[in-house]
Length: 109
Image (cartoon, rainbow, N blue to C red):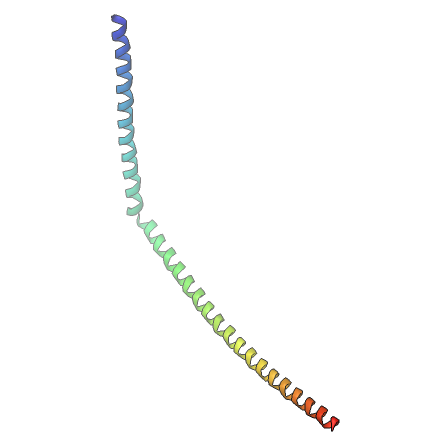
């Protein structure tokens, strides 16, 4: 019976030790997380650098958007000019072909 008591004591002690280490480890993790999270939001230099970065990024985006819109306007103007020249060219071809047909008809007569 003496051996059974030792075995039960070892098993019980192991279980208690594992549970205790788990609880202590969880408490330490929570303490470290709370300590690290508080320091980032309270750091004024970090927040100032973050604001400056955001302002610069917004400024760059607005510049790019304005450049893109101006490029679109230029491209639209170019495409309108191209359409006008195509229309003029097609009208010239129509008049040339009609005059060529008239000459053919005149020669046939």
